[in-house]
Amino acid sequence: MEIPAVSLIIAVYNVKEYLERCMNSLLNQTLKNIEFILVDDGSADGSGTLCDGYAKADSRITVIHKKNAGLGMARNTGLQHARGKYVGFIDSDDYVLPEMFETLYRAAEEEQADLVLSGARIVGGSYFEESEKTEEKYCFQTREIFLGQEGMAKLALGMAGSLPGEREDTRYGFSVWKNLYRREIIEKEGLAFVSERVIISEDIIFNLDFIAHVSCAAGIPGAYYCYCRNGESLSKRFRPDRWQQNKNLVAELRRRLDGMGLGEESTLYLARRMQAYGRLAVVQEILHGSKKDKVLEILSDPELKEALRIVPVFRLPMQQALFAFAMKYKMVGMLYVFVRLRKGERKR
Image 1 (cartoon, helix red, strand yellow):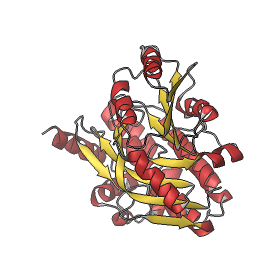
Image 2 (cartoon, helix red, strand yellow):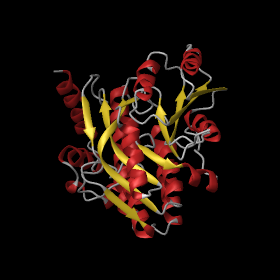
Image 3 (cartoon, helix red, strand yellow):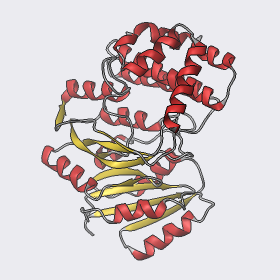
Image 4 (tube, helix red, strand yellow):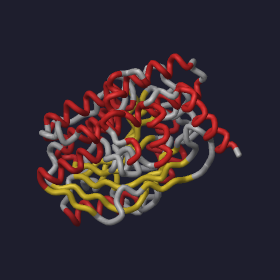
């Protein structure tokens, strides 16, 4: 039996509304030597039955039904069944452009890379709006090759965060779904996803663990993955414990970067990330209708205060700079004005 060039692991949980769009985009890939592993994570809306229908129609598709345990555990189940030279991960409420995996696979083969990274298209509203607007986010303007210890250090820091003068809060993004991974490394090193129920962002942890074993990585221009920011997505859903969960994540990133010998070098990158999480927590609390005391509690957190002390606020992009300044000096009323003004602007 021919070894697939790429194994795509698609975690499925109650996505009946979106699954056809996702699968159509995958089955229309220009790269044909792909196996598709659909992991039904205990869906209760009929998504599992749809998965079985796809498997009957295309021999490249395997379906695994399991008890619900979350996204990370579903991906781990898929990894146990993957046979491809490379592995990619898809969230089943998203979709991809037809040339995505041929483009990533060719780059991996040309550079003999263990990891290929690309950009993404963000489809849908921000925290302030619901729309079908699409924003392309290129992580690389030209092909960039990362080699050896120095290259992996640069890559790890740029996934964990960014420097104050950069536009985005992370230089290369931290999601796994826009990348391609050499499966041999995952299998040899016993790598797996942690549960997002334990650490809120399992992707960045997996990426850092993978990078620790990489000899060559390639970043390529283009945005092929369409991340759909619907109202029920994890990134937009209000969680009362989100701020604490994000603090826990930064602590875990710090521990891993320390283990890579990047402790001192990572300080400013992680401070930028911490203030970004503070901004997110404040925005969500305000939009959720929380009292000002809750916002003030976040602003008084010693870890956020330290991050805002470290980051040169006015080197941030303008809107972020103004928001960070108001957070730093606990101008709670001004923060409410910023959020409400932006919410009003987006409605017009």
